[in-house]
Image (cartoon, helix red, strand yellow):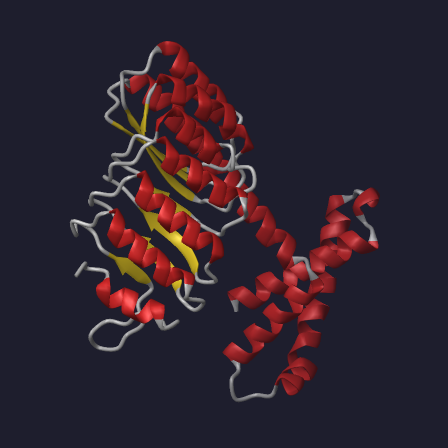
Length: 308
């Protein structure tokens, strides 16, 4: 009986697996369990009957081959369960595993995290996965061992990645300069990757250059977050929700209606007075518009509310 027997028994009954205390599991884990393809076939058959499990599957450090991955992928294509995390690291996987995983992602499967560390899915497998990055929801990808041709493939598809936030790859044969330049070129045209880990590579100049690109991407991401928050703060609905939240948190025993009648008028009066002083000192009539003045007042009231 494999280490998956407990989980399989629940999945076959269309139930969520639980631990010995009855707590629902969000991760089916059989790491280093001496699993073989026939064990994955049993798991796959159970998943086909299940429509309630939502979570991850961890099968790293076993004896799986492409055949076991085909069983699993074929099950996920028809199962109504939802797997967002899949760890297949350190198994005997080749290109067919990459092809079938790529096929699954092409069909819109909502996998967000994929780990293939220590696996060499060869150039075709790398290509099949990376060519889905323009449409897939993958956010974390450990692609495993990559050789020179694979670096060219990755460099080609990196600019199309939309959701990918973290990329991990492991050097196989030493990468030559052309492979490195192809990868760097792709990274320069990518703005989604915020974290990059390169394993078994001692080329410090290369690592420093690509880390500089991820630093740039993080800067873009943080700037976008600030702009998004600023845009939200000027949204009338968000503004109203922030004001109400402030009121209810600060004065829990006072009805909102009473507080509004007693205090919000004072905030508005103070804001109008400060706005008049600001416009007088600014002496720029072109900015003295209704829209700009409303934005200024909203910002003033929010700042006063947060600092009170």
